[in-house]
Length: 271
Image (cartoon, rainbow, N blue to C red; front, side):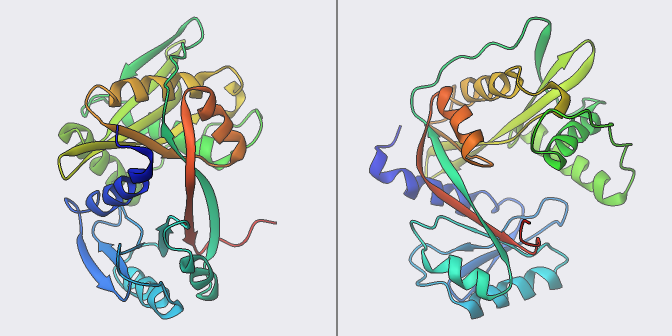
């Protein structure tokens, strides 16, 4: 693994390289704006060495994204681009700061008895079902409430997301796992490996458990398995946690906090 002082450099390199197979990069002031398929959008990010992020930079990036049919979105590491927070807020975006963690001393976490874990193939006919598990979980981030499963999304946007995901799985750019209990998917997650100048780095993303089944260690078990799989080839594995409580779960399975990641979009402020 790279030494700790260089971790943020590797993570920034990851985010710069990740969109390249899918999007053209448009420089806008101090920001790089990936323009590609709206089914798999990438946020604008500060360009390393590009100088301070200004309000005008954010406004121009958002205009470019919206003209391309993409969501207005900006991400950055505040420890590396401290001006971006104020600039994004001044441009009318909602900013959320999340814990950024890297695998330090991984701990194997077993899934509960009766739950089986599967590696998802690109041709898996249940892929849209797994995506619905994630959608339900992220729509209800707190507690263990009984939540009725959402009906299948038959929109062209949903079909596009599934098609892109199948392509990414087939190419090895997304590795997806699903936990199944009594024949039904109950938790999912992925990691996304990227080669950064000869060093493979992977980000764990989309770990989600159905709300009624939280508190059983399903998410931790899926995340642990994803880390083990990623570390077979990756030199570094990292993630952004949804909040401090989620970060503590990841710390218990061997992640360590190293910084913060900030996301900005047009969501209304909480509360």
